[in-house]
Length: 339
Image 1 (cartoon, rainbow, N blue to C red):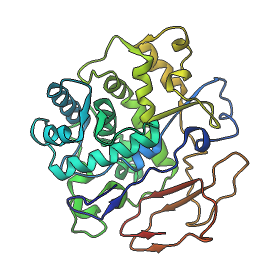
Image 2: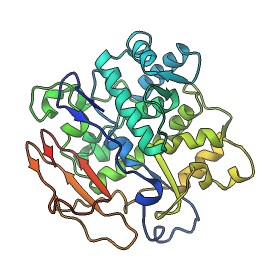
Image 3: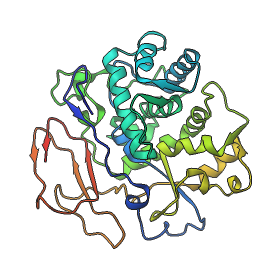
Image 4: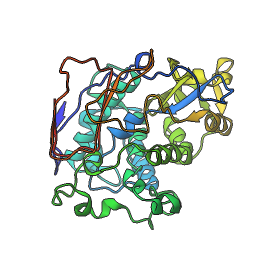
């Protein structure tokens, strides 16, 4: 689907081939990793799901938004029509109608791509909405300098939510055109996927994993006593699991041995397990950008990827036009036409 944000370029979204078994691959686990299971971040949920709106999201704001959303709904599923109505009238903070529609379109595409749920585009689990709203808190602009990285101010956190000054508060300084106050994050940022950006995303998920898990358990206000395997599987929207980077498990809960013998697990115990298993998948989400339009040499079994990043006001053609591509990563581009 395509939609026109309130201010900014036309954004076209289509389900990309993020097949668990075919795309997230690597020949082996990281060196020195003795565990038989791995968890890694689905970077596409952040790369393609985060964009600027009139709301400068922080963890407390997401929590307040989800609590008001739950209070207005009789069930965990919501229709597109109800979402637009509730998000613009009942939720705190409220969204504009165009923002609510934009979020819905993106969330449906990411759910279909990451979770393989090819259901109706008119119905979403509010836990999916909650997880992707939480992704909005991550601010890649803060990774630009060592000063921000060293100060720990890479995103608005729980403790300093009201005090941290977000670059989103000065949109004219970050917009590629200098006149668009609400351009998507991917269009504004000139950051390539360097090691700092990957480390920041991993640190963000680690720091806020408790709240991600609370959202999956439909309990944004407090930590539940236990987590079911079904609730943990909902986190498959932002995480992926495997016995190695090339052997992807169909369900996230299969990465936790305790779920094989019981259906629930104490919240704190599960959090400790995830903290030990969570790594960055450098094979799928490489930290080194290749020359634009040049396909990197890969080992057998690794998906053939082309990275298009950091371009502005450019027309880009794939050469050769009929070359094989398993994964096309388009990040940090603005005002571009890509064929």
